[in-house]
Image (cartoon, rainbow, N blue to C red):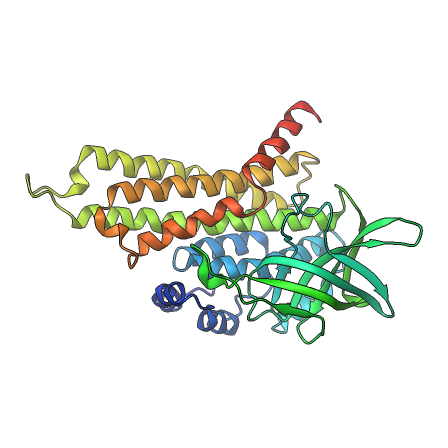
Length: 367
């Protein structure tokens, strides 16, 4: 059962416009969500359903929280498959720790298959030096998941994945998040300059390049569906606002409500049809992750395809609503205008459309 009560959701929605307008972090939202146990571990289906609901009230808050929940989902997925290497993360999350993603790097289109960050062996662990972008939850995380490339003396290259504690020296936030949308996430650039990760917080040491390690699968299997869940929730709210707008407006010529206008009704119906098609795909994927279904190499087609279809559909829904809701939606103070800016962020999350199509083509042709 979700902890997202109507009263809590209404309070969260009431703050969203201010967070966006003032370009500030969702501090109060995080405090309340943390207090009711929203950041604690649970199944991917539960996380997905909760995130879709939360995003309908505050997309940026949901997107920021996503990065914590992805790590929870990774540890959960590994545990369910008999891998207890990240059980400490589940325990820390139960105790109130806040996890964030420090994986994305400027100019690194190989995503998780290589890194521009260096990882060096030191006594008791590794130090990391490099630049990470789009670090959501920058003002609040207590542990930052990151990775970097280690080059051994014999030239062997490996990718070291680990978690930096906020109290550790050697990192700083640039406080540079000033974007078109999703502003409350405060996803600042993080500069690592010898940031220390102890050996007991190293999650994996993997070869450079694509691999089938369960840790990598778990990252994709949680990141992509949860991103999809946020944008599905954003689209839910946009459609709701579109219907409300047409019901409130009427024609000066005929006096009829715009909700009776056949062309506008068609637009709303078209948006609803597109949105309806997302739910079975989303549920199928997250239920298969929870159900330990083995799709083999076909998993990446399913996961990247879900993220791509959902973010593109959300953009379509918002566009149809903006075309129908009237000029008031174009005002910067309107919720629809904020949703239009927020939904654009979907094209920047991995996997991008080009990568998705390469993945699907590879699956089709057995590459």
